[in-house]
Image 1: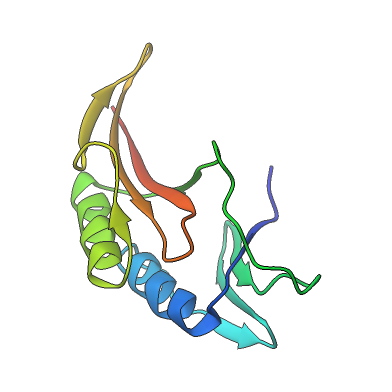
Image 2: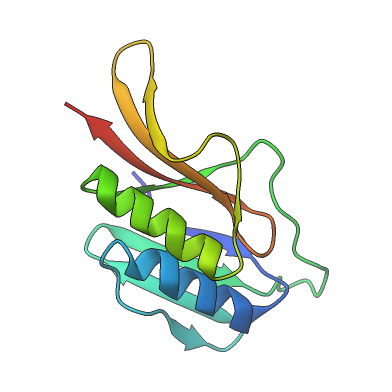
Length: 125
């Protein structure tokens, strides 16, 4: 459904360090810098961070969350640990299983250095 997701950043270097760590924890190669943007590409899509092209400060989406698919709960936990170790902030409950209406999910939530809410998610059985 999506070709890419792009979010804003006020510090490209700090974002690259953070996302290289969290995405590296789930098997994604380090991002590449293209001017005022950094891109991480996989066979399923592209994630990017960018300094806003209008010159205004980047802000995060209140109520928005970007979810990264992981293959195991252990990978989600490693993702979370890498984020906290590289400038992210743990939010909500600690990483773990949560029961939804139709399935169980393993979720781990962070705020990135710019305040964007992100999560790692594994749909359980």
